[in-house]
Length: 219
Image 1 (cartoon, rainbow, N blue to C red):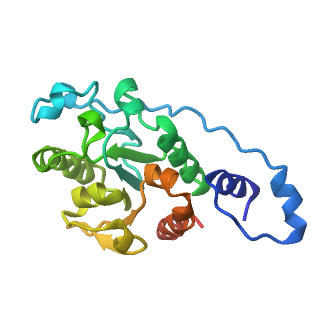
Image 2: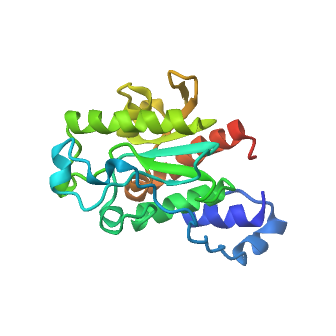
């Protein structure tokens, strides 16, 4: 395993067994700073969307960010508070952890496309209502159809529902492959925000990411 990936895994809080001869090298290995993504946040015509009541309280519509035709598409749940206020993805502690997860996979934010399943942040950090989710799921399905990724990584129950149209529990579904109606492989795993609350699950999440890497030939 290369030095940089070991540094990212250590930053994620995942312990890796190493040969004694390589331990000192890993300790001294710096974490490389990730450059700011060069591609701007996508701003379709949804910027003035009023299809549901979330338009009354949101600050920005977060459509997504990244490569137009990615090999890997990542779907989260809803914009974080920092993302809603800044109109930029990868903001806040969960966003920072996601960047480290991508780096451990040998990917940059420019190489993937990352989008929330629901594009507007609900007020008071509540879960989106069914009608709100269904409205955005139509846009999510359009994004998937336009990008035609080789693989999708779905973070959490809401993302899995939006991508697969199935109600799944992450604790039961993670680590398994599912397929969209167009036969795009989907891996469901824990959301970075959940991993910040439950760091003991980072090892399981890393196992899920490794399966995605194998699917994309990144090992």
